[in-house]
Image 1 (cartoon, rainbow, N blue to C red):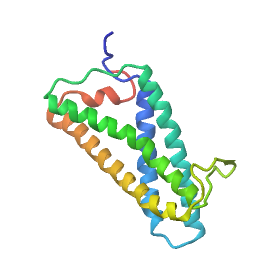
Image 2 (cartoon, helix red, strand yellow):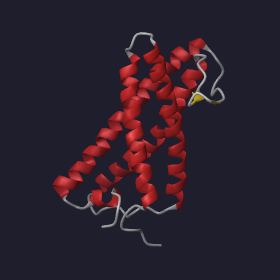
Image 3 (tube, rainbow, N blue to C red):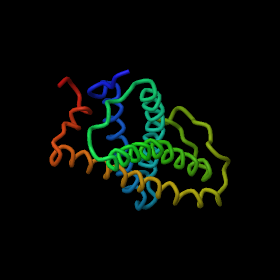
Image 4 (cartoon, rainbow, N blue to C red):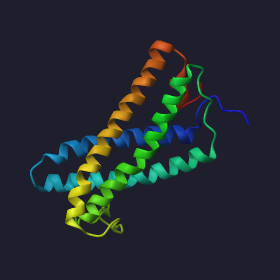
Length: 178
């Protein structure tokens, strides 16, 4: 079975949708964390939770799509760079799930249910337990900052490929035909 020259439109859409959602959820999360208790803070927490649920769902769909559709072949290059690229991609996929699940666990343990869009109550991920909530809260933040760091590495590698290597890597993940 041969590898395609580029990612298909569904994979590209998942990539950019998740990129925007993750950057947006991260920015909202950082901003809301230091706000005083107010209606704005509560609204942002709900938006952040909704984004997390949607990121989790899109990540599951993206993973299923990826498992069913062969990606383009690795670009020629040193073996260590190919290993690093695979490690970063695996880390991204793991964090796509770990960050929202840890947030959901924190919200459930803290006794704050998630009601998607204010109309669809989701089941608690864990039982309410304030001590556990205080334990998992910093984990959610640590995982989110780890995801942000891995995203920056991913973007830096893409920029290197585009402007230093000039190997056409970005063409594989853009909309439209080449």
